[in-house]
Image 1 (tube, rainbow, N blue to C red):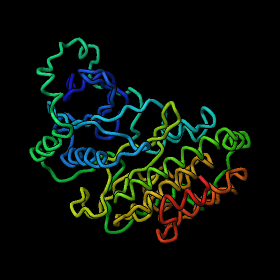
Image 2: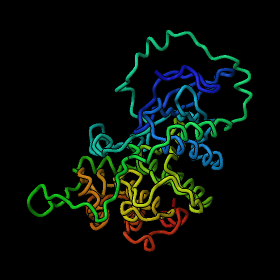
Image 3: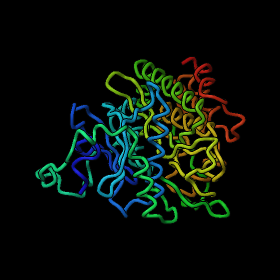
Length: 375
């Protein structure tokens, strides 16, 4: 069972589950301030690379003070669990926030993508929560713990990772080990690919309704502004997707989950050569091929997100990894305005340019996307 407290934070309830950890609602032991705490563990269930990425995520987010980037408070290691405390964003992920209709394809994608959403509900809880809550609280010397400088526990995470050192393994975030040659697609249909179906008339009306378009333009503008800030400080997110973008009750967006972040000038990247990390559905071709990436990989991911929001289905819809790899690297998706003639023309054009296979043919900055789309 997880610890009742980590650092100055009391663990309360489960918010969601990811590939290697669980996110909990928590509160500060002294002032009751709410937070979200990501726990990785218990050891040896988590590989050391995941723990080091958590420490890295804390250090990166400490350097990224922006209204549309989630804030972090502290990090450390307790009872075999590495932990990260961050701002609790009360709201919806991007897909749900802009969902046109309950039960429509755009909502169902979250359960068919094979991704690891940051906020999934409480299903699959593996310990007895009621018994855990009945245990007496044993957190000693609270004032001394609270007085410890934020981030002092990051080295504890790294030291703990050193103790359980192993070769890097798949991290559960949708990564695979790339073979010498690309994976070969399997022709399940035994013939040519079927023509993609445009959204139904009813769904198209919902996708294009004015209120939804106003919300979409506002939130995408904020996300692009945050991306421009992140990229300007030399970082690439590498796992941008709808479930990693939250919109709070005041309709302000936050980019979340920087566990796979890369600093362009960092020679000690936490990824082995030829290892692909990220979520297949939103990977740029160069990322899917295991090559070095820069900020333009995040811009590709924004193109995928925009396409999905405008059409109601992703540009590369296969659920078979090898086939999805082929689609991303070789197939041009159907034009957005052919699939949904009523789609916002500026957003559609921006998405299609962002989905160019060659990074040099995409927009070269998030700021340029905002200007072109008039966001």
